[in-house]
Image 1 (cartoon, helix red, strand yellow):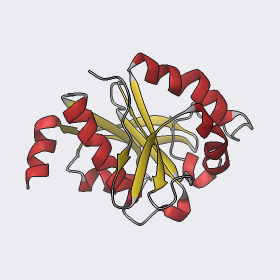
Image 2 (cartoon, helix red, strand yellow):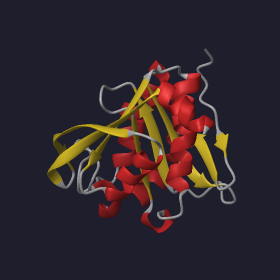
Image 3 (cartoon, rainbow, N blue to C red):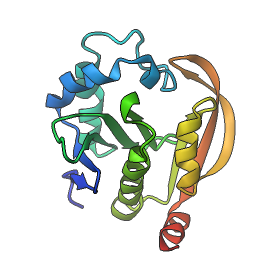
Length: 184
């Protein structure tokens, strides 16, 4: 399999593979409570001045090189230099897909579009049999993305988020379910 991560283009979006040069733009956009509150507590808060660079250099890019994680920046297609979010896939039990989007870009269906592209890649290119995504229970917007994607709730447990210990839901969909839904 080709290890080069593709760039994806849809009508509204450009999904580009993450690179070290993205650190300053991620740092500017990401360090917002509205973005981080429902993300894993492993993210330091307040977000340090070198948080994005450390994440890319020490975690994301090495995992991409190992072929265990796949990360894209999300950009408006008409403004390819404007980073507005990130989407990640990873080989981690119970946590295969994660994302964030700048608040001013939310509510336009952009993350649903990006998730569709990434889920297709997970099942059709990486040939994975199951996709699972955790959601903090209060994160209704993220839950709706999973619901609209045909995912189903399979577990509830407590997890640690930047906002504290919260109920967390695990949503999942199989490759066969994804393919059937895409045919409809």
